Amino acid sequence: MSNSTEPRSKTKKIIYKLCAAAFWISVWEAIALWAGNDIIICSPLAALKRLCELVTEPDFRSAAAFSSARILLGFFSALFAGIALAAVSGRFSAVRILLQPITSVIKATPVASFIILALIWFGSRNLSAFISFLMVFPVIYLNVLAGIDSTDPKLNEMAKIFRFGPKKTLLYVYFPQVLPFLRSGCSAALGLCWKSGIAAEVIGIPSGSVGEKLYRAKLYLETGDLLAWTAVIIAVSVIFEKLFMLVLKAVCRRLEAVGK
Amino acid sequence: MIVLKNIYKSFDGQRVLEDLSLEIPDGGRVAVMGRSGAGKTTLINIIMGLVKPDGGEVSVPKGTAFGAVFQEDRLIEGLSAAANCRLVVKDKSADVNGALSALGITEDLAEKPVFELSGGERRRVAVARAALSSPDVMVLDEPFKGIDSGTLPSVERFVNKASDRKTLILVTHSEEEADALGCKIFRI
Image 1 (tube, helix red, strand yellow):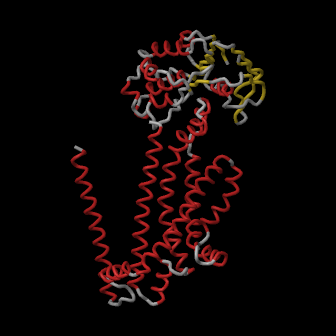
Image 2 (spheres, rainbow over the protein chains, first blue to last red):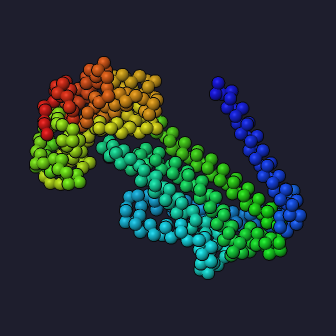
Image 3 (cartoon, rainbow over the protein chains, first blue to last red):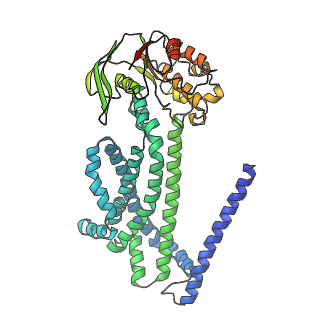
C-alpha cells in the first residue's frame, strides 16, 4: 500500500513546488510590469537573459571560483575548528568557560562590524574566508557542544565498566548523540557562510570576486546584473549545501553501520 | 577480595551510607538487600569505582574486570541485541547467539535494534552482555526486573552458570532470588 502511494505523493510534492515557484515568478513579473522601470526592478525574463550572457563572459567562472574557494575555505576551517574545540570544551570545562565570551561576542556583533575590522587588519583579498569562518564557527561549535552535553552520562559509565576504550566510546556513545546536532549545525551554517562571505566582498570589493560584480551592479544601477549574480550565488550555495549534506549523510550512515 | 571499611556517602547533604563495612572473598556471592533509597546502588557503584565515597576505604584488586547489569538497561539503542553483546566480548570464541538463545532471545530477535524489544527482552540482553564480557566480578542490580515468571527460572539458571567460580554481587528485594543464586544476604 505504502509503496504505491509514495511515488504519487512525491510527484504531488514536486508539482506543488513547481506551482509555488511559478506563483512567485508571476508576482515578480507583475511587480516589474507595475514598476515599468528596469532600474527599479527588471522582469524575470530580463534577469534570465542577463544570467545567460554572464555565464558566457570570460571572468564569470573565475569570479565564481574566487568567491567559492574563499567562502568554502572559511566554512571548512570553521567546521574542523568548531568540532575540535567543542570536543576539548566537552572534556575540559576551563576551555568551555574560556571560549564562552568569544562565541557570545561573535554571535551578538553585527557582521558589518567584523567586516570593517577585518578589512583594516587583513585587507580585502581573503576577507570573505575570514568572515565565513567567523560566522560558521560559533554555530558548529555550539551545536556539537550541545550534542556532547546531551550524551547520557550513564552510557559513559557503562562504557567505562565494559572497558570500551576511547575509540569505541567515541563511536558508540558520542557519535549517535552528536551527529544529529552536527547535521543541523551544518545546515544552518552553510546558508550563513555564503550570505556573510558575499556581504564581506561587497564591502571589501576584492578584485575579481562575485562581491565586486555585485558592487559594480549597484554602482551602475544594473538591476539585471544584480539579480543574475544573486541567482548565481543562490545556485552555487544550494548545490554545495545539497552535496555537502549528502556526503555528511553518507558518512553518518557509514559510522552507524560500523557497529551493526 | 573486595574490602570496604567504614564507608560514608552523602548526596546533597542526605546521608546514604554510614559507617558501612563489607568483605567479599574471591568467588563469594553476596546479595545486597534493603529498603528503596537505602544506598544499595550507591554501594555497588562505589565498588565498581563509579562513585567516590566521602570517607572510608575501598580495596578492589587492581585490574578487576566487572560485568554489570545496571539499574537501567544501558544498551546502545541503535544496535541490535547481538551487536550490543559483541561490543563487550573479549574472547573471540564467545558464543553470543548461544548466550542470547539460552535467555530466550531468538536469532531473529537478536538481530533487531534493541529499541524494538520489550522491557523483559532488553533486560535479558543486558544480562547476556554482562555474562559475555568475561568479568572477574558480576555486579547485578535487580537483574530480573521486568522478566516474566515463566522465563525467570531459565534466566536464573543462566546467571548461576555464568557466575560460576566468579564473585557475584546481587542487588535485590527478593530473598527467593538471593537463594536461587546461592547468595549470602547483606542488609543495609
